[in-house]
Amino acid sequence: MRRVAVLGATGSIGASALDVIARHPDRLTANVLAAGRNVDALVALCHTHRPDHAVIADPALFNELRAKLADAGVPTAAHAGMQAIDELASGDACDTVVAAIVGAAGLDSTLAAVRAGKRVALANKESLVLAGELVMRTARESGADIVPVDSEHNAIFQCLPARDGRAARDTSGLRRLVLTASGGPFRGRTRESLRDVTPAQAVAHPRWSMGPKISVDSATLMNKGLEVIEAHHLFGVAPDAIDVIVHPQSLVHSFVEFVDGSTLAQLGLPDMRTALAVGLGWPDRLQSGVSGLDLLAQGGRLDFEAPDLDAFPCLPLAFKALRAGGAAPAVLNAANEAAVDAFLAGRVGFLDIAALVADALDAHADAPGGDLAALRDADRRARAHVAARLDRSS
Ligand code: NAD
Ligand code: MG
Image (cartoon, rainbow, N blue to C red; front, side, top):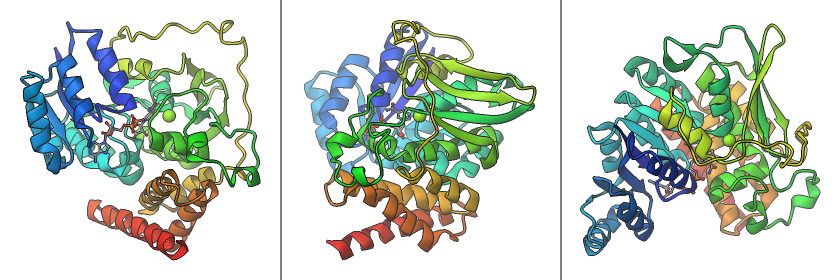
């Protein structure tokens, strides 16, 4: 029996992971559920999935969680605080961790699980953008198997052969990776026409149903930029060998091109349960609840176009940060999180997201990224930089 900790259980990925787990009571059990602040949603999940442990990240909510679990007659043990999440993700209560906390807040628990040698089904791309070298090096040392569940990276994982039977992929003979992007809700629009788009318009993704932060990232194409950095770390591929192509149907989840001219792709409906089933079942295939791909029913077309780098400058900004190295990707990620928060709160416009990130990168691009402390410091400075900009303009 695989005992799974679902971190970010109340989110979009958490729901998909729990849906797959519940289909396999003979081989999967959700033993730890962790969430940020939504006690009621966490208690409801505990009622359904009966984990041994539930953790709420905000320590002030511990008593409420404990009382509501008791009221619901659920025997799950209550915990609170980020440290409790790290301890449960690395301890005996699980052998597999679904890392689906949103943002840099997911780094510590991802690292704790990797250090402890767990199977990590990794959705939290920000932890790789912030500290990819450290996370991957730690996995090599501990023997942790990281199976990417970001759909593009999961596609690449499926297309590349295994090395030594582990999750690490064999990239010999690889020429380049091509990440597909849906283009988001504003595909085809000019930069100027995006000045006044609202948060509600930005989070209305045409193909995928996701949490608010990644939905805005998809609208700016920063999501694809973060994914380029994620792919670089996961598969050890140089920035020049990673391309992005817009594919509005979101049925081809990425391409892998080899030196002999062969290109492999993974296709499927845009439903994250497929990638989660791969992450949870690998090397076996599991039923995920997702139906097969009927291309005719999907309109019979697969279209591709180049990304518009003028309308969506976040994508080139991410390449710039990756090439700069050091803590530049950490700065990009933190500035983006702060800018997206401000956009969702109605404090800045859509175009300001890229402008704030560019500004933070210009100011802090040379920050050293030697160790975790340096990366955290860069993350803090970038957030402070954006906050100061916001204060000045309000
Ligand atoms: P979401 O906003 O729907 O859910 C986020 C989850 O994280 C919630 O359970 C929330 O309670 C929890 N959380 C937030 N802050 C926390 C904290 N400080 N401590 C503990 N828990 C905290 O987000 P999502 O769409 O599920 O995305 C989760 C991650 O997966 C992100 O990194 C995203 O980029 C990645 N991802 C998502 C999708 C998707 O389809 N949704 C696809 C690929 C990758
Ligand atoms: Mg993705």
